[in-house]
Image (cartoon, rainbow, N blue to C red; front, side):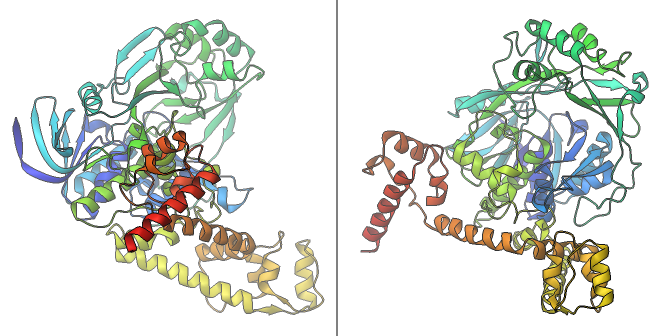
Length: 627
């Protein structure tokens, strides 16, 4: 076995969204990093949707950004449309989404990696792990050449034993046109990991000139958006619209008649499909009452004619795909530049991971992204940052980096994965976060920048800016809470113009702001601050005051949650010896090996009675150790 002369602190296998964030985070912490890509021309590729963010995913991107990650900044460099979702609803569920120029995104991320001190980029197919005494020592590529590393992060996406399906035609590929990783998949099985199969897919890309856009409803970008990143400017790229249309009875009948020719329903695919991003065949079978389904046409970039046809994903033979696409009004003459396809691939049951995303059976080996059973660029990037930081912590002999469910969406995701596992592609939703009112997009930096700074991920200038926003917000809230507005003709005239109840006695300004029909701009008009207040601070003040009661209630719930998390379960405990637990509970506890009583309570099927028994057992062990 021949080794490269340089030894690395961290080797990252895979340069998709997870791998890029892992490498960048570890390098910022001062580690030497080797980042492998099968093809350097596909770094941070966007093989499916040309977009970043969206429902709950936007929150993840903001958290990555608050911790010094790159996804939001690269999105701002490459954005060709900004759109804020759920603006008519409360701040807890508002989410940013950008439509991006795919090539620009790739080039910007590749450039950042190339210029980051401590990162070496290499093109190779990693085929094997070097493991000695259950500890990873490095990797070996397809030529038999080896590289030494203290830790390894696997961020392999859909490449582990990947198989692409188009009708009855199947071929090994990590993505269409790219090699699958067969050797590494076999290595993980050989090391005893429990492996499953998942399936995802992507819709066809259409030639822009062949589409009649007049048959679609045009959706323009937000007119005056904020940048995605807390620390960058919004995109200077041309802003481009998207187009909304619908399928019809002809489309549905065609797919229904040809289900047997579909790879998904023809028996060619065994992997578990994504419930929340179904292929069109799934829609027809699972929602037979629907007469139409929405499709969205999005530009893949400024300098390409390719149009991403969201909603038309399928695994039909090419001749059926052409007929299916052309059944849609406005697409009667559409030319398919890239066909839709399904892909299935290996993933590792994430219950085999510690909360750091390090595997329980092999020390120094971390997993991030779709290898853990998740779907989506944003979920992958968040795991990549998490794994990269914890790999660096292991190398530097520091305490692990773990955020709990009350601190971040990424904490919710990781806890869900390692505690409950997943049998289908996991996707982040706001409903998964119990404390989502505290985990908003707008306050991600206020929640996480201090933690990022302590880990070496966030620099002093960014931290100073965050602290300034936090201090100015607190100061303005105090001013508004202390200020009393007395009734007058001008005050009541303003209230009347807002269709808000008039006042007859003095009222504190914060009580006016809590009214549904009042905003910060209204109270600012009635009693402005002595100095300038930034738009960001105004937004924070309005949210904090309007939702004060709900926030106070959620803080009480978080306190109870934290108390459960403080009750640690002794390492190495033998759950089989605890009397009063059912065999099922003993097996589940032994599989997950929860670190706290709180984590144990979230294991699927865990009962209040079992938690009580476990608590008594933990107390008994603590007393015996102290005596």
